[in-house]
Amino acid sequence: MNGPSILKGAGVEGHQVAGLWWVMFALAAGVYVVVGGFVIYAILRGRWSRREPFVGRRMSDDAFVVIGGIVVPIAILLVLAVLTVRTSTTARAAVKGGVQIEVVGRRWFWDVRYPDAQVNTANEVRIPVNRPVTLKLTSTDVIHSFWVPDVAGKLDTIPGQTNYLHLRVTKAGTYLGECAEYCGLQHANMRLALIALPPADFDRWLTRRAAVVPSPTNELEARGEQVFTREACAGCHTIKGTTASGVVGPDLTDLGERGWLGALTIRNTPENLQAWITDSQSIKRGNVMPPFSLAGDDMQALVAYLESLK
Ligand code: CUA
Image 1 (cartoon, helix red, strand yellow):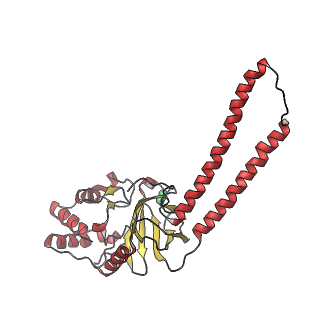
Image 2 (image 1 turned 30 degrees about the vertical axis):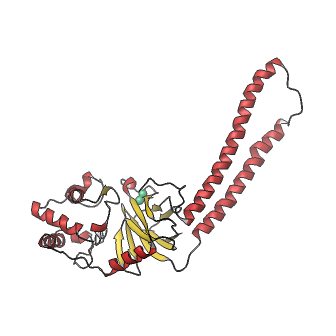
């Protein structure tokens, strides 16, 4: 996964935004060249005129200021205004029959739900390539902003309000998304991965996720499940098929399938998961998860169980 860029245009909407950016860049570059030309001309002319006086016709100073300082800027801004409104209207136009996904910005992670399939996950949003997708965005605490620069413009998630982001990704891949509205201490660690899959892979994934109720496959994992439901974990997290149904933290039903922990703060490895459970505050200070100390065997079982959730 590369750093995000609005210029890659991996989605239809991202492509439109990139097009607009290039127009703005071209106009700005044009203004820069013209103004720079005048500055250079003024410097050189200052030197020449010491030797010989200026001859020939020139525009009056007033006309120059009115044209260069008022008429031209208004014309440029008008062109940009029309293009911007047109681009955002096209990009925001609703699409029917797309995949519906609900995304809730939380401090500091993203709840992700596929309501039709009743699949819940977090921070890693799988979508099909070349199919319209509608993201239903909201928040339950403060204002966040959902932004995956490669594929579409950003849109705020606002408590008590639902915003709809329509997009169609044209290239399969994993795209980095970030919270683009300052939301507190861990704003910088509120990332997400938009994973665009070939449609058949996406359908297979969603069908499997909807059907699978993860269950321990060996003694260690079974003990881990007991630890999870016995300890405070279950009060804050949900795992489908268990008694754990907390909603304070992210749903962990598919944790073993995720590439990262803590909204892309660290990679999802057994070592990192153990470090996170033991003291997530030293990794992502201010998040709501308290530190846990468990007897060595219990910790090992818990980590094995969580990583088995696929
Ligand atoms: Cu959430 Cu910034």
